[in-house]
Image (cartoon, rainbow, N blue to C red; front, top):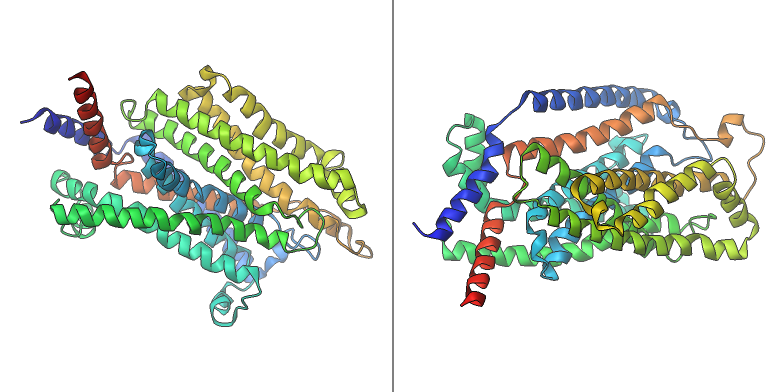
Length: 445
């Protein structure tokens, strides 16, 4: 038995071991998520029967928490293309153990983006009209198709690298429940590891990596166009496309850092998700946050310099009005302070960068709320002769419950998938390790 084989066996056993354990804490966690989902399902059923009048959305605030969450989910989903495509194409080998984490997050996020759009519809039974009777001049039609296309590509990009790992699980997880063994057998697609199969797999992965990039960038660009093509003050901006993409990379990087810490701690993967991975992901978060800060300055500096009537009213509300506390807390604690802290290496160690990432992710969600909601109260015509409630937007219990339910579903999707499949790619990590050892040996000689 060769040294490389021993190393592969050790990697294989280390990464399969967590699948054998179903701890009491994990069972409680899943039950809590299910309870949250059931409460959300009940709230949505009530909303479906009663109508969107249960929400705080009215004539002026026709977009609320649901659309803000939709934009957030689309943003987080972009991380799959950043880690699995961009970094791979740039030959950043260190990201290999993180690819599956990013792909799981991307899949769960884009699934919730699609679900949130349906939740926001008063008549979800008419969703097929987008396909049957949609007009190409409507950005909503573009968004519908790119979201579903990205969902399919994300699923394929997650599944293709899993095939060899599933074959390993098919042969090694003989003590798994019958349904799980059958699942492995079906999903392995009779994988035997022949040269032809490897060549086909790697070629398919390259095609998908290249294909996902334009789709990923287009999905968030098209989402930004839902706002930018509107002449409303606060939305009508030429930078919204790259601005949304930059913000998406920030939100996605923060989500990956949080997941890295949780999986590393829960599954004891310190040898595979190392301190160096946290350091490099912290640098990546710093870089994307700096780009995002640049676009934030542009977003407010240009209209602030002109200070036209409607733009001025909108900016005054954000800087000094009722939205000021949320705005400044989001900018400071969700962007500026994390950038400063990430300059220092000790802040890029696992626990500190985990805490920073939580603040960044919360700030990313709050930022989408600030983009969507305040600008609706500065229309071209003044708000008059309407009830006082039309002048404000405060999410109702129904909206909050359903929104929390989408977060619970996304987390449950990831939780269940990592109970069945290894969270770190076995064959890719083993291959990378062997290549590293071979290079090191060659250099010594």
